[in-house]
Amino acid sequence: MDITEEEMKRFSSIAVCWLILSLFPLAAAGTEIYKINLKKEIGSTTWRYVRQGMAEAQARGAGCVVLHMNTYGGTVVHADSIRTLLLNAPLPVYAFIDNNAASAGALIAIACDSIYMRPGASIGAATVVNQTGDAAPDKYQSYMRAIIRSTAETHGQDTTVTPAGDTLLSWRRDPLIAEAMVDEQIEIPHLSEAGKVLTLTAREAVQNGYCEAIVHHVGEIADRLGYTDYVIEEYRPRLFDEVAGFLTNPALQALLVMIIIGGIWFELQTPGVGFPLAAALIAALIYFTPLYIEGFAAGWEILLFILGVILLVLEFLVIPGFGVAGISGALLLLAALILALIGNIDFDFTPVAPLDASRSILTVLTGAILGFAALLLLARKIGTKGPFYQLALHQTQEPDEGFVGVPGELHSQVGREGITATVLHPSGKVHIDGQDYDAIALYSTFIEKGTPVRVVRTENAQLYVTPIQPQP
Image (cartoon, rainbow, N blue to C red):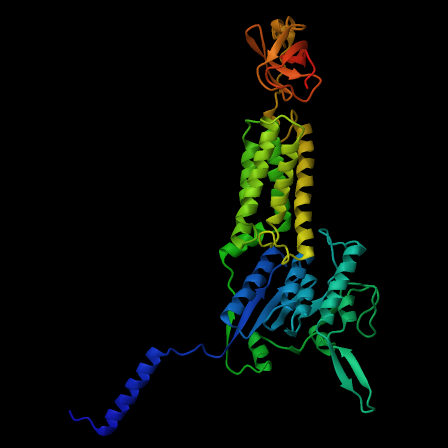
């Protein structure tokens, strides 16, 4: 079969094109718009979504980020963290309010460079409330008023020159409107009545500079931004993100600290039980693991925690003294728990914001205080109905039934002299006439091994002794 010159040229062109495409793959089509969904309560999990999503968008070279929002709010501390991240983001960030941006969600939306809302959506109602839904004390409202007002102010002012030549400055987002979303006492004519917290509809938000346009989907936002050739990529959380977000919740972390401290203390007071120590170890593992994976808890901080536990054990079970090991161990333990929550780099605390540091200290101290309170409660519950009911003795042994509380030979030891077979701290053993007895130092914190002692009295199957010669 003969091949014409024209067919030969066409074949050559196709071959050249195929070679070029195989050697130089096509670049990604258009600008990438990276979408992060905020469609649940604002908390540790959503904070992780935004932090991870923003880092991924920057790594992919995205042109902008869109927060697809539908939330009724959440914790102020996590909303403030997200707000700070957005205000300092290297990429432009746009909010698409798909129905609701209430409370903490309103603060996050106002931090974005532009706000777009679906028809029927709303933004506002940012009053701080407690767990029961009642308004929190004014000191919390004052803080929220300040941060939402300052967030609105970060978007700056527009300059307008009137026909008369006067220069007028107007806020792009009026801080008073933002503050009225928190404070029900602020009145704005034709918009907010005194006694009611402000919530804006989509149309009201457009009229007052809190929404650039009413749109139906993210694609409309891209069109309005002038993107003619774009792709929309979405941040998809992994299972680890969900688990890590839950485990790094401050309330859970405070509970874990309570279990760690309470478990260690209870085990030291009742050595051999095992359950308190196991609970403390499991709680410590849950506490440190996500923080270590995230890069917050460094290896030396975990070693600091282990060293603190070792010093506490030595203080209670081995080393007699004035509590130096115990105090040092407690301080190291608390320091390790606090340092694991903040983003310090070794001993450089420059990257740590004061708010993050104070938040970490408050979380750990709250857990520690609750732990000691629980210990006091459990101490009273021993011997009654409660979780440690089985650790106590509940059956009495009466003398008329043939039981003797203290062996008779112990009473004969009163007034006799011996030598300490172990350190009394304050309990231990003494050696009298070739036999060892359980003994307690009566008037001192401890008595060294090998010290001559005299039995003063006997009680609860133990001898109470004092040194024959005062210890140096």
